[in-house]
Length: 286
Length: 353
Ligand SMILES: Cc1cc2nc3c(=O)[nH]c(=O)nc-3n(C[C@H](O)[C@H](O)[C@H](O)COP(=O)(O)OP(=O)(O)OC[C@H]3O[C@@H](n4cnc5c(N)ncnc54)[C@H](O)[C@@H]3O)c2cc1C
Ligand code: SF4
Ligand code: SF4
Ligand code: FES
Image (cartoon, rainbow over all chains, first blue to last red; front, side, top):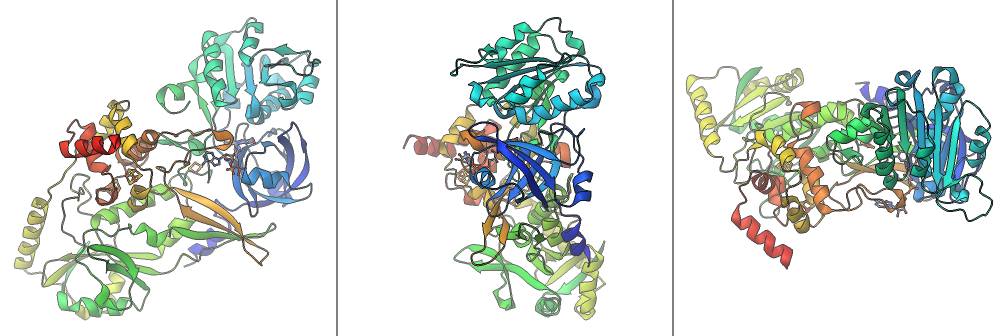
């Protein structure tokens, strides 16, 4: 039987591709930015993904973990991640340097339905590490600016030093085709010129929202969902146009290890992007 | 499907012949009243007079720990050393159904070669059984199997009727055709029908399996879950013994004195505390009750949308195993409103202890 041969080589869905860290630098105290390129050039360019999808990354000897792809598919070749130091795998990853190798497989999960979002206004609400998957869709919208209506970014962090992509987003504020509102819970620098208060305090700044024509996207720490979803509902955005990406423990990314199960679905296959409609139908989602 | 007859005294000659083809696994007696599937060389060790093995036969296909890759930073070499030609003899219908469920699960959406390759190389030689007080396979309709085996032996005392379920099964018979008879006399058929009837009557336990999917939904917030949660020891035993549990963890360990790492897969259990924990200290199922709910959703409700039926195959292992009697029977009965007093009294005592 040559079945094994076939499975061992090309059909093994768990097989990581060696990939090189092209660039890494800190974004905040415990979050680093990583630019990674799959070592095999052909495979690097062939790695096609959607905004909101994730990849499994292996640091040899430490383990494997899921991370959202932070870059946009509109700029192929390089994959970007922003990663918080949290435990075994991420600690080992932070010890790696530029040019070091990791393993990468994916992309996995559902992405944001950018085709359905065409022509619509987009409100992106991010907090904490929620910036990782949402930066991808934000950059995608900006790269394909004429395909979308208004693009609005609401970003909240605890303190200025904890805001991911702060410089990038301050720069984006200069664009007149993006409405960008940043806020921190408290300013400990005395030099913060943006908003203060939790992210929901930014909602009153939004004027003239046409709910039927709007998609609301949210990702952040678990506590954030409830409050932001309420704001979206208050704006009368249809339930299937309210989208979020959720985190669960994941050990395989392909629906086999069971860790990400919720009711009868697997977050890695049926998510991580869900609509508010899904939330109503699945009790444990948020 | 063809059915042939084999005299009982021919069994060891048959095993002798087939064990030359592949590694032979069969139930062996362990301790007073427990059995386990093992590789057998000496056929006298085989004990077919068993009800259920401690661990289900999936352990033969996906061992509790096996290597997935030998890896260096530049090359991840798949390791399929757990895959080999095997013959599993003596599997009961519930466990064959369990493997059929695993087949669907591991092929759904993305094929898992670590299971499927192992499965492809394993021949399944089923064997009939007689229910004890824990067997629920009649309720789950897995007491008789029509697929999932290469050969199936129904024990009718001095002879076997042997169902041939695949060409590979047929090939095994052709190794020693003289041991089998194609003619099945009318009295043999009557013996079989009588055996079926008697066996059907021998079931003393049942659950309302068909209603359970709806009851899981309707009683999702029932206080019964909190009670069960308080009693559960979160030991994970129910998961290890269930033929349709599949959760696993992955470990990546550098090999001492070598350049490579071993990336291995090992069984995990959703009833264990950290199962749904993520970085940052968040645990989506901190409460035992929530973890039990996940387990029983899987056994009694989930899977319908994807595979047409829930996962329980009625083997009774969780009943024989759980130290505090939380099992498919007591949980189903509780959700069904039956609350068997003995169970609830003991549960309340254990919880207040
Ligand atoms: C779809 C998806 C996308 C993600 N995207 C990103 C991203 O873009 N950036 C990012 O930084 N992270 C992301 N994550 C989270 C990331 O996967 C985890 O931070 C990572 O798995 C941590 O791995 P580790 O080995 O470093 O930590 P671990 O060693 O696994 O542990 C991390 C911490 O959690 C605790 N912990 C470990 N195991 C458990 C447990 N079982 N129960 C409770 N606590 C436990 C430990 O005490 C430790 O403090 C994403 C997760 C998912 C599912
Ligand atoms: S739930 Fe219990 S009876 Fe059902 S298959 Fe699993 S161990 Fe057997
Ligand atoms: S239900 Fe029983 S066997 Fe399962 S984890 Fe709880 S105590 Fe252990
Ligand atoms: S991560 Fe393994 S099943 Fe979803």
